[in-house]
Amino acid sequence: MTDTAIAWDTYAQQRPERRPTNARGETTWFNWTQYPDHGPGAELLGVAAGSRVLDLGCGKGGNLAHLASLDCSAVGVDVSPAQLQGARERWGQMPGMELHRAEAVEFLRGATGMFDAVYSVYGAVWFTDPARLLPAVRERLRPGGRLVFSQQPPVEGCYGCQASYIPRGADEDPLVVKRWDYEPQVWERLLSEYGFTGTRATVLAAPPGNRTVGTLIIQARA
Ligand SMILES: C[S@@+](CC[C@H](N)C(=O)[O-])C[C@H]1O[C@@H](n2cnc3c(N)ncnc32)[C@H](O)[C@@H]1O
Image (cartoon, rainbow, N blue to C red; front, side):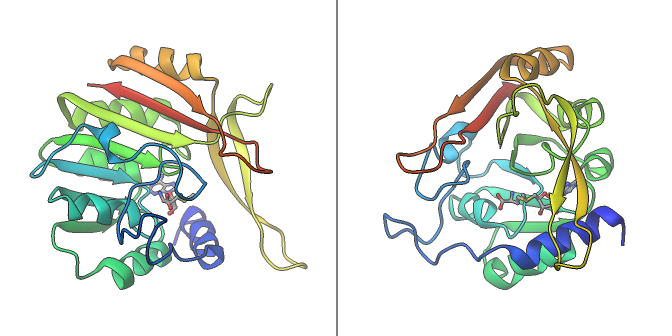
């Protein structure tokens, strides 16, 4: 396994399971933010029953399962076997869901057919150099199809490739993965440079409470 896959497997073991139901009592739902029952849903993707949708860095598959429940053909890609194992255990019976263990850019380069939407929730789009990833996504999105992704907004003054630390035991070094942080207007410029149109990057405020970090949501069309 690559160091990246080992790091994300470690992360997988630390993450709590998605709740059985959300505040509305639904068993599947879409969440773009790090807060429960907060923010927009799958409508940002502009897809309908029969659409082919790709989740880059699908993790344990909660968002993907929701799209499958809407009768989309829901394709998920993740580098972490442990994350995918979690997805299979929870959602393996869900028709219309397809899971692949792969690095996002490699998967896109080897993929056939087009997607109606590509998305990533704190996923591979945040953790991959956009100079590699964005052209690969653009190639596989049908004209007019949407790329939508969410991640934490950048810390002021910390832009470009940053280190993210995944903690381990008290006497072990943390594992490191790279992420790419930019201000909203820089994401808009980057996406335009790689041939996307209608780009829009906004920070959704945190819900009322002690937490203050919002969610950067970026939307574009092929
Ligand atoms: C913070 S988790 C988010 C998972 C999921 N999207 C969610 O909302 O729960 C990031 C996920 O992206 C995956 N990932 C990171 N870089 C990747 C890459 N280059 N290709 C594929 N998956 C990647 C990790 O394995 C991990 O499952």
